[in-house]
Image 1 (spheres, helix red, strand yellow):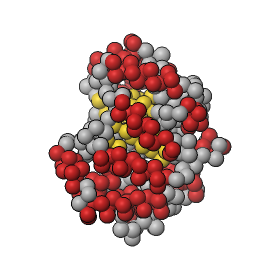
Image 2 (tube, helix red, strand yellow):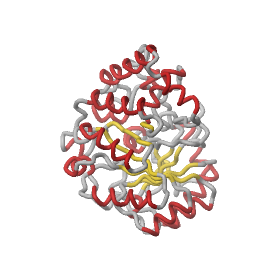
Image 3 (cartoon, helix red, strand yellow):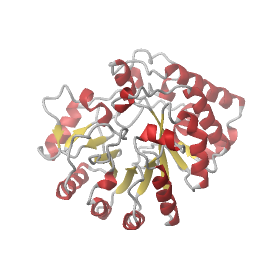
Image 4 (tube, one colour):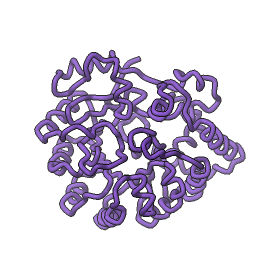
Length: 370
């Protein structure tokens, strides 16, 4: 299959210096930060690849001393910029830079209860994050929120939604817990997940004019449009690239040791020229679709859940092609949506989705949720 990364988000990560116990990708905690000179080289290479979207993440990207010139450099090249941050290190100068360069800001804030926030995020900074969100709002910057569902946050879903609605945040990205690193050490789980999914689903279909919850919209669109896209995420379709501070390039940061362990040496943007990099990506990266998963091939809702996150599966069972451990709960949840769709309960919401121009991933290079 032809591999293309032109339309996906490229993630450039920074070292985490806050000793965060949970990061968006648990892949780079032992690596040093990329220098600004190296960063400019990376961006110039990505432009040659045809990349249009750059996502800065970490660890915590705002810790980097050159985060502002980095943003400015990307913007000057005409690329779309996403910033995934825990929201703890936002000052007036950074806010001005974000506003001036049309940066999409996604703040990771899992819970509104301080104890649950600390358990999930590993830091005691909730009040600071809330104040920084208000600062961004005051400066007319659109903020989205990212939340990881785990046993510390599942009971908080309604509180998080209420906070978002009261703070002009209209887009929520929900992710399932990848049971690795600190999550394994602290025995973090996703108990009572179905109840949390139903709560978020009811919020979405009743308050769709005010809020967008990504996985709900994604599932509804797949059911209504009979979408047969087999890939759970851009990484699994080889439409994504993640670049670590040392220049190593991964198809998926959460699966770096698995997806790359068969390679003689990592693909590295500093040590190889662009032609060699692209040739290796085309020949060595592999797509993983729902039809590649033995227990999913004959499932009647396989194109809705798309087999689930492979990182969760591998970290749980040690098998990249195993069954999603959340399978039963997700099938039960999807059956509720299908029943509501067939009964006409979703007619107003579906009509709205047909009116608004907001596809989750339309392969045009625009993705609101990342």
